[in-house]
Image (cartoon, rainbow over all chains, first blue to last red; front, side):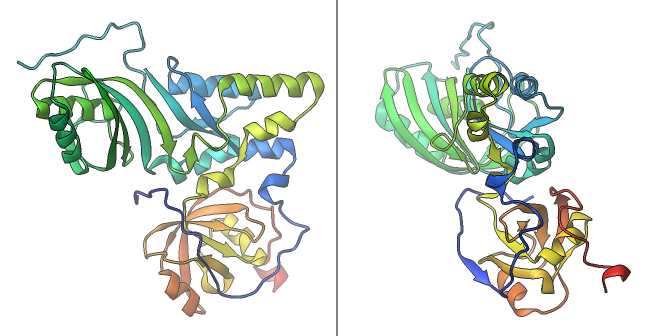
Length: 90
Length: 256
């Protein structure tokens, strides 16, 4: 799997002219709400304590959907219950 | 102690997770030093960590603890006060910042640990564009349920295509779409336009002319090759996102 960075290349080369038939498919921002959720994603600001999995399951409940996934776990070690104990290197 | 950007994919969009899962991340980290360190020395040591580093995942990690190679693209020191250092780090996916802090502490000789961490970027997702909190989402769903107003909910959710912002794209003809939905590879005649600079073996996204995503694929040719050639397979379909039947079936006996 290649490690892509976020630099966006917007140069487009046109190979052939072609038209699209408006009878099929829908441009991404014009989908009806149910479709919008079905093919949707949320740029969520995760709060500090709950785990990524907990947050994802809340989102599922809020929207009343069956599946949801998260990209890149933000881990929750030292969730406040464990007092930090510095390790000194002597 | 960790907050920030967490992209969540819904329903069928979960298939697109791999588009940004392995992309670069940006964090703001607060590091606690265990002894007084001269600012010059700290700055020098932090600079040493830019580039390729070896990292063993920390004791409590969600992956196997074997030595891994990861790239730190940049470390930008924002503030240093007493034994606290605040810095912005951009890195490859799979880098443990908690481990990075303790390694920095080892090199300094005094020890250090991560106090606070916030992810500010994950691939195409940033804090400045359409970030939603759980409260915003609750507000949006309640407004929709009680008043039937879907505007807020619509704004809180991005179309799945957003996950492909940073990826090279190949746009295909309407007549090719359904065959790709059924898992076929992309052949040269189906290509309409494409991003420049695609290399062989790179992960690309296949799009319709209406800017909808069809599938994630592996390029079998470079951009130049795809423009030049009139026949042969150009991309191998890897993960299909669009539902089959969205576009009409244009291959096989009935349609020839």
